[in-house]
Image (cartoon, rainbow, N blue to C red; front, side):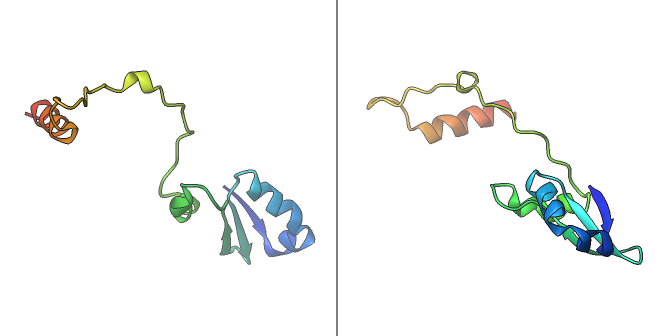
Length: 95
């Protein structure tokens, strides 16, 4: 997160917004006091933006999901209910 003064922001707000669009969080200060925090908007992580801006959490970069790593369950007509199978496996794991 970077910090700029209101004066610096007023000289070129478009450049500051371009930085935010690229994912940077920018604090705007007046006389050393933070008066605004500009955070990137949108996406599924938007609800965490204020926590990121405050430095309370740090988000990891997204990683690709490999579906082959997930267990597969037979859900044919004669198979047990998938939810029951998952819950039973979970119960066994945590005992």
